Length: 288
Ligand SMILES: Cc1cc2nc3c(=O)[nH]c(=O)nc-3n(C[C@H](O)[C@H](O)[C@H](O)COP(=O)(O)OP(=O)(O)OC[C@H]3O[C@@H](n4cnc5c(N)ncnc54)[C@H](O)[C@@H]3O)c2cc1C
Image 1: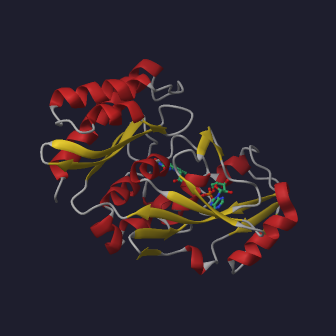
Image 2: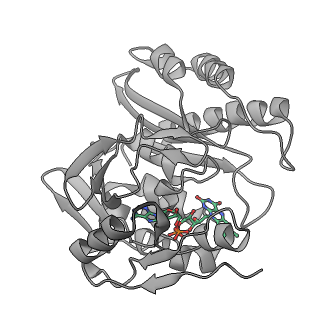
Image 3: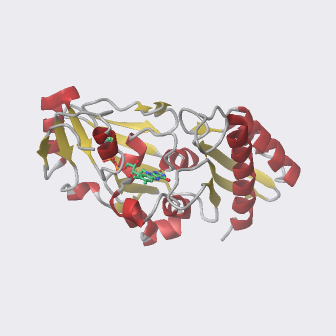
C-alpha cells in the first residue's frame, strides 16, 4: 500500500522543527524511525499533509548522565541504547527491554521517543519508563515542560502530548547501585509484540523490600502501574507467597484487548506469570 501525498521536511535543528510544527499544526506529523507511523500512513489511519523528519537533528541523539539523571535524546535508536556503556553500567533494565523489541531491522531505525510517543500499549518502553520513574521533556515553539511517565499515557494511541510539541528528551533517575531489575516478556515468536510483559525494579533493606516498581505491557489500553501489587510488597520480606499474592493483585487491574495473541483470561494469567518471573529475577540480581 502507498501512503497519501505529503510534503517532506528534514530540519537540522529543534527550533526549525518546532517552527514547522507551529506553522502546519494538525496537518503535520513528526517522523522518527517510521516503523509505526509509516504503516499507519499506508493504511490511511494517519494522513499528514506535512511530514517533519527529525532524523537530521543530531542534538536529539545522545545518551548522557547529568546530576544523577540519565538523559536520552528522543531520536536515540534501540540499537544505540543496547550498545551504550553508560546504560550497561547504570540502567541495564533499559537494555534488557530494548533487546526484546522486534528484530535488528526495527531496532536500528526505531527510536525510544517514537516508541513512547506512539502510545501503543503493546510497545515496551512505556512500561519500562513507569518502572524506572522516568519523565519526558516536551517542547513547543512557545514553551518547554517536563511530564512524568506516570500519567503520560491516557489511552490507546493517546498521550498528554499536544500536536505542536516534540519530545526532545527522556530523563531517568539513575537507579541506586545494586538495584534488582527485570523485564520479563512473553511473545509468540521473535519479532512479536508482547502477549504480556512485566517490568520490575527492586531494592531490599536487609530482608525486607525497600523499593519496588511493577509495570505491565499490553494488558490494558495503556501500560499499567501495578500500585496495589507494589504496596503489598513494601516493607515486608520478599517470600514466594508474597510474590504470588502481588502477581494476583497485578492481574486484578488487567483489561487486555482480545486478539490473535489470546483471550483476556489467558493474557491476564500471563501478566501474573510475567510479574512473578520479573520479581524473582530482580531479587536474584540485587547487588550485581
Ligand atoms: C515488525 C515490527 C515489530 C515491532 N515490535 C515491537 C515490539 O515488540 N515492541 C515495541 O516496543 N515496539 C515494537 N515495534 C514498534 C517499533 O518499536 C517502532 O519503532 C516504535 O513504535 C515507533 O518508533 P519510531 O521511531 O519508528 O517512530 P515513528 O513510527 O516515526 O513515530 C511513531 C509516532 O510517534 C510520533 N513521534 C515520534 N517521535 C516523536 C518525538 N520525538 N516527538 C513527538 N512525536 C514523536 C510520530 O509522529 C508518530 O505519531 C515493532 C515495529 C514493527 C514494524
